[in-house]
Image 1 (cartoon, rainbow, N blue to C red):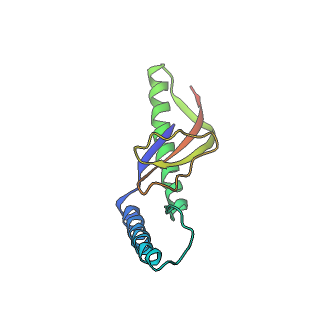
Image 2: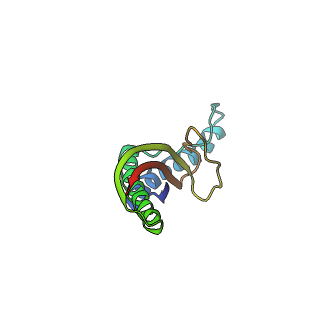
Image 3: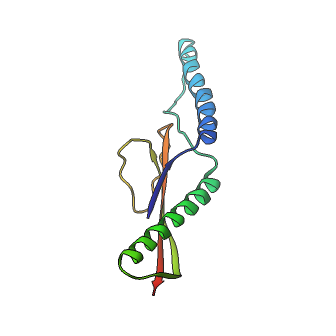
Length: 129
């Protein structure tokens, strides 16, 4: 089951504070150019720094959701969900929010967008009775 969520406000505030510092610095570059100081620059990159916590949260929610779906499928088929046989974590993706970015087989880690969406895919196999 793929599980998506936008970053919670705690993380968004951290990202926005760091982004504002970067944008202020970018604006000040014009002053350096006016003083004929030459340098090379590129667009800012935006990284999410609490990936470990985010992955744990997404795995928890995705496995809970997958189990609920499996129980519903079993119930509608006249069976009962039994033991978990295996659980596999699939791809972890970070894409720009509402960007329409393609999901990649190896995962995506967007650094160009400030607002991001994270998703993870979990595969759970259960036995049924």
